[in-house]
Image 1: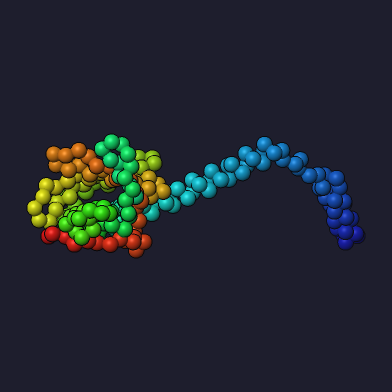
Image 2: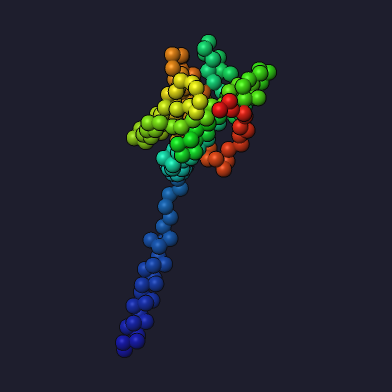
Length: 194
């Protein structure tokens, strides 16, 4: 008798589950709902990618182990001057820094139509408290004669950056480019006077 009751219970539950309620489908999404869901998915992916990218660049800046490769600088008249990233860069390795610029068609001290300055970073200050930017302020103490310039580096979450150089007694120079690790950098160091 117990077996029959058990068997009947199973048949009854199977009947309930296989009824119309079990096969009720959710209504199809409208185009607007599908588009909204897709936008939400993309936004979430982009936010996650930004967070990963931000952490990567924070590590580079915190460790003082990165290269800023310049793409262009803003001239005094506001016109951009395109630069070659392999000879226009700032390389930071611990407290050692190399700042180099080279321009095509010009004779320069470094053999690349510009100058190369080696020095030490002094008063290095890294600030990650801003929502979309990572900021570095520092002084460069050159090896050899020369006035120490002050620099400010503003890095976005995607690695694009603005380097502002404040020379002693001169106008600031704004240079735009990309932050990369030393392993990914493709740079050519010219000769230095010191």
